[in-house]
Length: 179
Image (cartoon, rainbow, N blue to C red; front, side, top):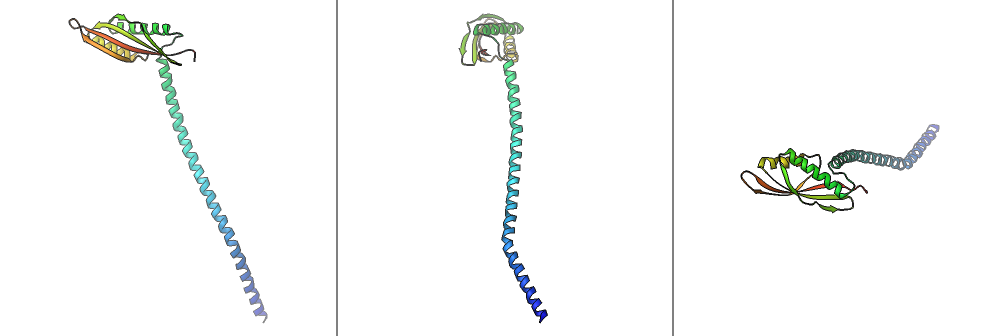
């Protein structure tokens, strides 16, 4: 009988143990799920941080590229305190380019100024006669100039013998000093 009481007690103890385990299973299951959810959150945050880091590198690279281009563009602008000074510098540069191309400028019209808050645009009309080769050299030297001098209008007509009559409108740019 003692053996039967011990056995019943042991069975009862096992049943109580299993019941207590059954109450703990939802607790451990919930804890396990929360643990994995928090791992997922941490993983997604890490991936997000990596994407941001990659985007930051791209943005910094683009900024540096823009900064380099801006520096290059600024170096290609005419400097000056007023439109007349900038126009004078532009005319000097155009005369030097024409001489280097083997051309003599017949005339330069008065420049036209267009001014915005930050920018000054000078439109200069240049009239000259020359050979085709000299005109092409002039246009090439304008393109290779240390200043940004885009041609906005080019009128070339056949003149005497191998000479061509040329009218060129060129724009020069300057940032205003007041900014």
